[in-house]
Length: 375
Image (tube, rainbow, N blue to C red; front, side, top):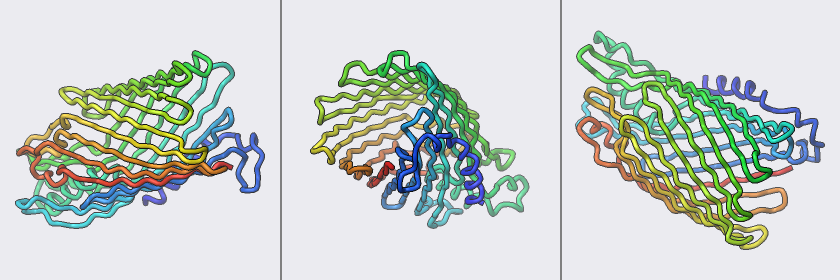
């Protein structure tokens, strides 16, 4: 089912491919001149959770009508461990994969305007947290079908689609850009469950989200470029979320650069988050570049809306520091990086104690290798 549904979306999103095939002569490889093929692999590893992410993409970025098309596979391997006094729980190993297709298309009109559209579809769990929670609810409620009111549990089949459209205005030639984006997403999720006085109650199984985003990008000097992003999003059953991100790229000289980002989000009634990162990059030669990054994130925990037990994550603080190297050789560019990563959760309360093994502190290692071939 997953493969069939994903193939259908590959065919549908292939409509993003523009008439650029006729704009570029083919050379040797069977692809038009200037097209790119990118490959990427990433492994995120901890003692009990192993995640991998693979991407194969095709893009044309050198014509007035540009496109990207990517196939994505995420593999999740999780050692599920319930708390000691969970009488219905048992240890097990979970292994799932998620398949996705992503496409985008942009066209530069005469003058200062560019139109943008993008779409994506996926089949499978969005993250390891969703997989862990689905297993918890399966163990708690899947075997209670003979009891009145406990027939709501269903085998989950998570999948979703999203679409966005926007316009980009170059209000200052090559130095000032204003972009407006509208997005809509629909996700079929593995719902949560709880027991109240009427028996088993299921949470929503379909989430819809709408957002509007505004981006302001400016080249202030030959060595300084800034970007400001503002977004408002509304998701089923939640208050609107407002977020902002500011980033700046500064070139000290022709060889060394620094990039900084700071952002945050707020959502009623009392959610707050803050994010920041800093990266330093230097060219050792025309073909070799080294870089180092540090990142940090903090929030005060998700909003709890359950009567007794809640799967809402407690407050979280994360930090990471990584190093890497990039190479450029004729028509091939590649990147290799290693980033140790730490998650630090606040203590779970009585309402979230059954999920304390999900929200425990972990040390991760992130390994990344990617490459882009230009034809």
